[in-house]
Structures are given as structure tokens and as C-alpha cells.
Image (cartoon, rainbow, N blue to C red; front, top):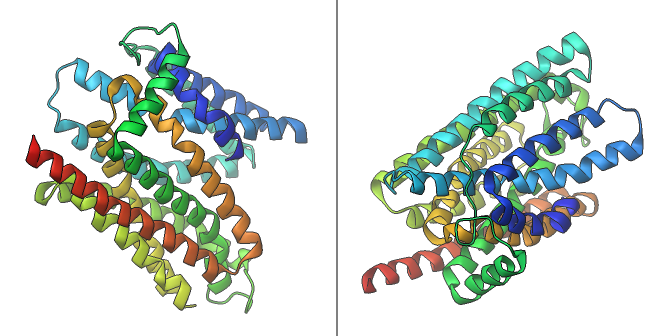
Length: 355
């Protein structure tokens, strides 16, 4: 996450300058290198892999989305279909995560601990082949730009001038910062409460017997969240529906703060995962509405800096604070994203009235 905060902030500018398709290709190449490095019993090489992983993560969450939105519009597809595409993608992400877990388990049983990384190499290579057949698109004026300084300046000016874009970036940072902190916390929290485990401390041996099933259930909930997001769009706007998503995520965090019962906390975590699934489609759709195509990747990566600072802070909190205290902070970040979303919704509604 520190690597992503340092390097990822600048990658968006290069994605817009040199091409979104190229950014996706670089992501695939980095993932191939990272998984090859996992084969070496060398600490320095493994650290290098983590640094490259921070860079590839930034590309994963910017290059693909900005390419899709621009290509969607270049081909003249209906604007409302963008949200539908994101909903389908989120349902597919959850389903693929479940399948990936099963395949990783099988590969680990057949080839040992390195098996899942070897499988990842094969799947990434297949993805790279598909990406190579895509059309290229760029930021700026739609062609390969000669100056990244122009993109940086333009992106910062757009953020300064449009409060809605600033709010959306802060909402994304707060929500995803809380989400990643939750990802760090959910295993030790449930391992401490698992029935039949050691009293008062995490029992990873007992919890590990069912951890795969719990992970699969969480991924199914992410897919359900994608369905919920599409349903929300049928009854209200994405901006108004996002308020419900963010505030429900905050409410789910009350349970691990107040209760120490395994199944109650697990239920709250599953509700949160559904909110996460819905939020990805919601925020991607709002970005497609508010961010200019020419600067989408650049603006998205600017806000990955505060996001990664929050994640590093969340990881550190797990070492110095009790789980209820950490979840209290996570709740406050989710709640702040909900409050900012109320503000954003009011600004969007006001703009529609004056349009």
C-alpha cells in the first residue's frame, strides 16, 4: 500500500498519456513478474514483488475502468448502459473470486504452496492475450499526449474547480480505506470468536478449517451486492442510492464493536461485503458521470494517495488498538463517506434543476 501511495499517484498520468490499453498490458506484465518472483526464496526479491504489486494495483483500479468508459462512448453505446456494465462486472468479480479460491485450493493440493502462483501466471498470460486485441485510447485530446505536465495540471485544476469531483474522490478514499482496513481485520476478529477455539485469543488452526467457506460466502455477497446495485438504479439515482449503501456499511460495523458472538459478527461482515459489491458499481458509475474522459485515470490516481495513507494507517491501528476500537474508526470512515455522499447528491440534484 505504501508503494501504491508513492508510485500509483503518478501512474494515472502515464496511463492517460501513453494509452489505457498499454496501462492494462503493463499491469499484466507486472503481475507475471510478481508471481514469478514468488518462486524464489529470497527476501529482497519478495519485497521487490510487493513494491511492484503496489504499482500493479493502481493500474488495476484505473487503467481498465478508464479504457472501458472511453471505449463505450467511442462506440456510441447508450450512456445508461455504463452502469449496467459495471453491475455485471461486479457480479462477475464475486463469482470469479469464488472460482479462484477453489482453483487455488486444488493447485495448492497438487503442487504445494507455490501452486496458486503458478496458476496465476497462466491466467494472467491468457488475460494479456485478450488485452492485446483491444483498441487503444488516450487521455488529453484523445491522442498520445506529448506532455504529462499538462495532464497533471489539468487534473488538479478540474478537482479544484468542481466540488463534486473533489467530494467523489474523498468518498472513494474514505470508503475504500475503511474497506481495506476491514480486510486486514476480519480474519483475526473471527478467529478470536470461532466456536471451539481458544478462549480470548485468535485460534487460526480451528478457524482455518472453515475459512475457505467463509471467504466464498463473502465473495457471493459481493456478487449479490452487484445485483442490489442494479436494482437500486431502477428505483432511484446512483447518487441517492449510494447514500443507503454507505450508511448501511457504517451500521454493520456497530456489531463487531458491541458484540463478541461469532455468528452475529459474521452476519454483519456478510452485509458489509454486499455493500462493498454495490459500492464498486456505484462509485464507478458516478466517476463515469463526473470525471472527464480525457483525465479519468489521472484524477482517479490522485485520490489513491489519501486512500493508501488511510490503509497504511488502518494496518498500523491493528497493532496498537483493540479490535472494537479499530472497527470504531472503520465505522467513522464509512459514516463520513455517507455524509459526504449526501452533500454530493444535493449538488447533483441542484445542477439538474438548473440544467
